[in-house]
Image (cartoon, rainbow, N blue to C red; front, side):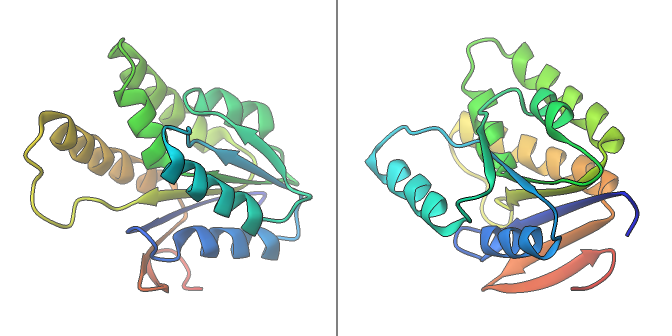
Amino acid sequence: MTDSHKLLILGGVRSGKSRLAEHLAIESRMPVTYLATATIGDAEMQARIDLHRANRPAHWHVIEEPLRLATTLSQSAAANRCLLVDCLTLWLTNLLLQPDSNILENEIAALLAVLPTLPGRIILVSNETNMGVTPMGELSRRYCDQAGRLHQLVAQQCQQVILMVAGLPHTLKGDPL
């Protein structure tokens, strides 16, 4: 592996994508910075966040950043560090819910611009949501469209892309696990 490696892990809800990402971060034997994009909107989301906190190693450095992902990545990346972003689709949701629609376009453009420049190991986790019926609501359709476009553009910049299904990794791009 070179001094820079980008990995995108896609999967549905409870597919094992976060567990795999955390396992690969541990296997990297590098110091890990965990970038959490979730925000607490209700008790169920609080429970999900608490579960993630309980399952990851306590010595990992954690940064909670719901919007400015590109800036946080550029400030945190280093040749000897593993950055784990969980997850891109929660980040995308946070951007879609901002009153200023320019924030969405600007932050996605910033992520795509900074990603190829980042040193170290970057593991990006995201939900593959576009494998079913097109949603009825405008915001849901917009989310699915944006997520699909984002995944395509990020996957182009990654050396490895893995799709998790039922806890099983399926390599879409790069070396198999």
